Image 1 (cartoon, rainbow, N blue to C red):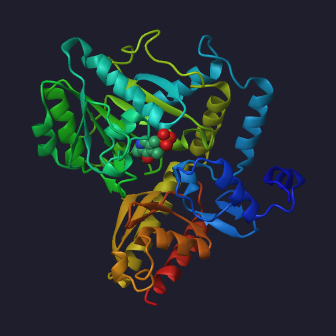
Image 2 (cartoon, rainbow, N blue to C red):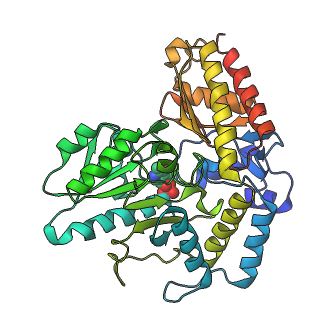
Image 3 (cartoon, rainbow, N blue to C red):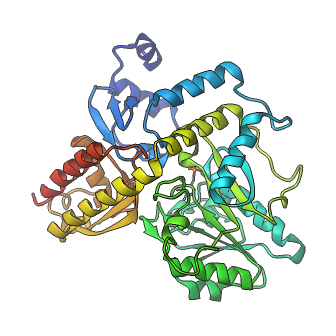
Length: 430
Ligand SMILES: *Cc1c(COP(=O)(O)O)cnc(C)c1O
């Protein structure tokens, strides 16, 4: 029998069965995976091992900001690989500083630390907050119920969902959860030990729930009154997905008194380098030098290859006006989903989100004839049906299906995706 490696290198004879059995034997089974093996992509399209084509409305999980195999990004990666892939943070290199400058200009004066993932970017925020409160013995960070901040030990402690914590106690101390969009709950949770508040601008894993303008403005006021850092996790909702660089910029558009709003620190990752692993956090003045030499580090953070990729992605996003595309095409998709929900209110309970960060909430599986007999939650069954219809989407909990398409998804592709989703929803009655 041929091994997977042989089949892959031969470029033929690669079968779904061979890939799956290799995983079963050698890969830690920590992920619930769909029975789908992807082997190549181009733009918003990916192909599976059997040659079937899918419209990718998940883009990884909001990672492939330019879709797959973007020729200019591929060329930039190849060029950088021929020049300098990695140097340690014992030295300077041009790309890291340049990227920090570009990201800072998209937010406000401050500085950037580079890491490799969202969880790690958030770890930086926890350490920043603890440093900030250290001399006064303050360390507690308030986060939201249904939040998601990553899978490290502190990440699962910060995350406001029990399912990520189960079996991994004792929990890292210093996190307190309060209901999202509830200012009074934050006020009541503040203690002499509190040092920061951390929220997502739009909760992603929690089911696509945007913060309200009043909540954001109220949090800023509360944090100022109590000398707390206001930190935002922009790992999923950031990077132009909502139509602006950061989600709060979109949420607060046109709101009076909101011009001066600024969090103290923002974490980023997912879309940042178009698929290359990269995380980062931005921190504003006067806190930008809190983490001094020797206080925080990571071997791979801000490596030339990832920085060059991120710079190229940013060039293309700006040149091709992809933030505007995310807003216009995404908001159009939302309208179409709302029409679908109006036609089938018994199965689609709500449509939420902004730009290219959308979710539709399904009824309980017992209420959906096509799903009632199977064990799996409605979201998973829906995502699976959509696979059969040639569309990739992302489940969020038991009821919500997310759309997080590449920022360069075209109007035609969006219409095609919406058509396929509609066709699947129409058949849920049998
Ligand atoms: C995905 C995600 C993370 C974790 O990022 P990883 O790269 O998986 O560590 C943290 N916060 C939010 C909001 C996310 O969506």
